[in-house]
Length: 334
Image 1 (cartoon, rainbow, N blue to C red):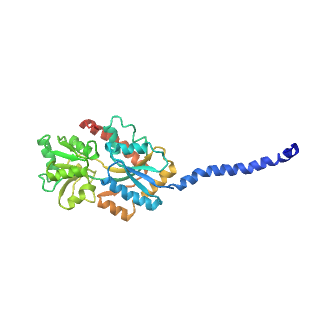
Image 2: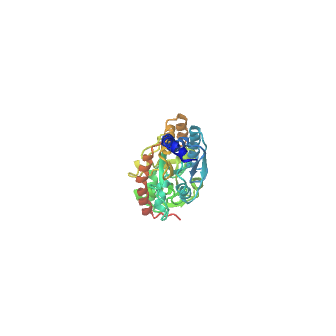
Image 3: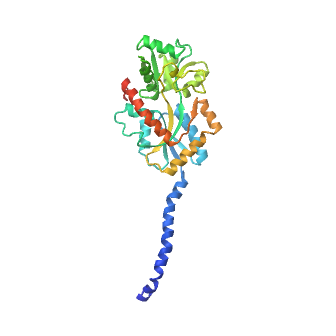
């Protein structure tokens, strides 16, 4: 190329540059939007930090199936049990915040900081709250032919005979364990905790007469009560629940005693806002789905499918509450 050609091209180059640069800039700016609109473009891993077959696993599979129908991609259940749910939680905390790793967990999310001295993460700051999925009532249940016919009976004997009343739960540091410890603290009782490897084992021990009482969710006890095998003395929610209108809330007998048990979905910290908005909206849509609500009703649960800030507020309230309960009862993870 000679000097004349170069001089001839000079005046055209700025015009060409002015046409190309805006197009390039527009393409670059559009790329993130395209990527965000495409979510989910592949299967999403839905971690459940507890073993298969439990109440949260049942709910997780129901929610995952509905999200698959709505979003067009599988929500693959990944059960990562152990250490009170902290193993599965840690995996999600450490996962990329790209929308392809989320967790469905229980109120253990608020309990773990109370019982583990070196948990390694704070659920209030190291996760992105997505939705408070449901409140699941914890039941205080005995065998149908047990001497306790009411929660008042249990309270009276536990006060009169310290350490004699035994209660079983799904393990040390579980939400059920903390629910029992909170009852003892609020009512001024001395009960003996007997931990098991899951609510099913605790319930079997109750039927065998090895323990008096079990703290377990409605998912595990409602059917047995309807069959006449078990007697539910009370629920630990703030009021009676639709599935058990004749069963009192424990707070009616023990003022000040409410032990919330809930399920929630969270994601790694830094989840992009468009993905969070989409996932939260799809979950919220399930709240008014008649079939979905009916399925939840069979579990004794009310679908909440809340906005992210509701879950954030619940964590902010519950973490210090369970810290006080665990400290008073001397509960620490083994």
